[in-house]
Length: 240
Ligand SMILES: [Zn+2]
Image (cartoon, rainbow, N blue to C red; front, side, top):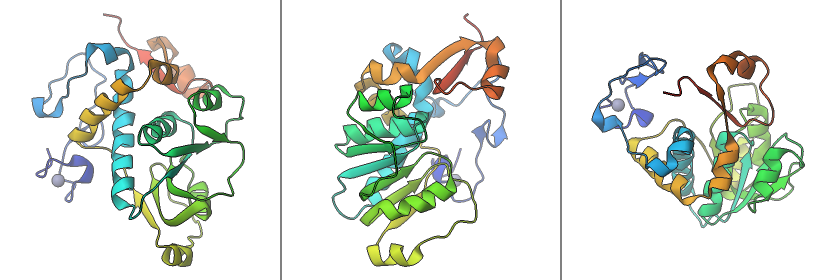
């Protein structure tokens, strides 16, 4: 446990996190955890509870974005239509943002249709408009840097997945437009708890299509030949 109780924002790095640092993950039949690390998921959400972890990341990302923005942000652009990107769009809508997603999937793809059928604007090409919040969930640093051209004055860009690469950073534009770029990863216990509450407020038809369950035996296929239609592949180890 982090001394501040914020393993996601630990200042020393001297903390333990299962499957990440200092402790094995959950690929085992029994595990014992500190009750302080557990949150209750209502039985009604059991089928979508696998989304709590990515939702906790999104919950934190939106908290950071809204804390950092110094005006009244109204518009949001999400980059990427994976689990994080789609959840970030659902969160943006609930927070009252005019929400757009830009991703590589074609406009007729299942992901794009899922988003548009719930009122999110799916952009087939990179927008000329500017957005108050840009949330990068596509893992592409060149895209993250290029998208700064679509960041409004006082805009905030949250970087969730872009890896290091040699990209040109428009620092002068950042200065002249008073913009902020923030990295964000993991989440605190409170974010997990809020994620459960927020998931409970979304329609199941927004959440169920994100998950495709299959047996344990098909793990190799999910890794080597992931289907573009499957947003979050869940492998059921035991039906017991
Ligand atoms: Zn700490």
